[in-house]
Image 1 (cartoon, rainbow, N blue to C red):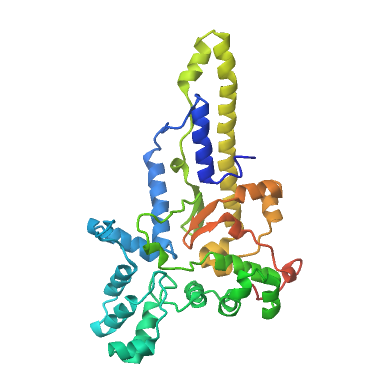
Image 2: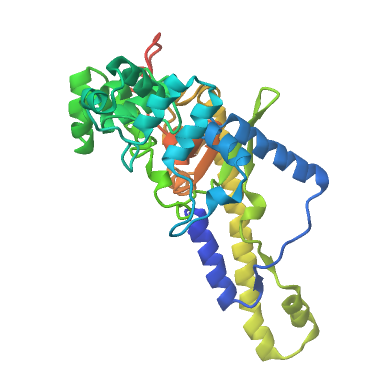
Length: 377
């Protein structure tokens, strides 16, 4: 149960600590190499994810093409990736006339460190000599670029731009426009009353909003030091079928050291046997528990994909209700154990990286036990 609820970093730290205490635990074992067909299948899935990642598609494309090492030289006085350079390369690929691209670049240079545009367009028009209509068109174009939300005037608009990018049509839009302060105070029932929608719909919208990036320019502030989240499972699509895979070899490998296994068989010293026997039992139990953890995690991800098929094909606006009890019943686990499986585990699909808990949502009250037409987030 302890290993089941661990996040992947927590598990890695636990195994490293175990290896220091138990001589039979060997982490540096690479294991047998997978055959070429397994490697090719894994590469195929990763390439599909990269090609179909709606959240980061342009980032993948630019980073693959921009292999000039000078771009990534960090440190004082060195060159580094910046939001301005990132936006400029996107404009370059649009093959715009200079009179169209120039005002966009001008506005890009005015963005703050978070990627917001907080200046007055009329004042900029007077200072630059650029006609106000040209600047307005330029700002609209700037806001259509990656990362989603760039060029927004404030947090509400930043979140709205991101929601519109994924074609969200539910109450999340109304919440970010008119109820952000209430959302920050966690006044979900008051929001539901104001919007005349069930509380569960506001909870769904809240979960979606939490996945958005409030500072789209922040990723460019500290190149090389941005934390990167490694998902535990990933979902790809092949021939119309959704496939679930695990990280596998990225976790610290773990086996029972064969030297100590042979030593237990070959020696006859009772003190050595007394010392090694509980160590062997501990290593075998942990190895089994890690295997059970991975099996439960994959089964959970597969069950979620089976229940949330529309989400993975259409996007976050198609997220369906999935009560914890229903998922637990599918997995033949208790709700408490199911929570342990979900805790701090992440899934990567073509729409981005999501906590597994994101997919477990209660149905709106009016949907429980009733058949309705339309509605939903």
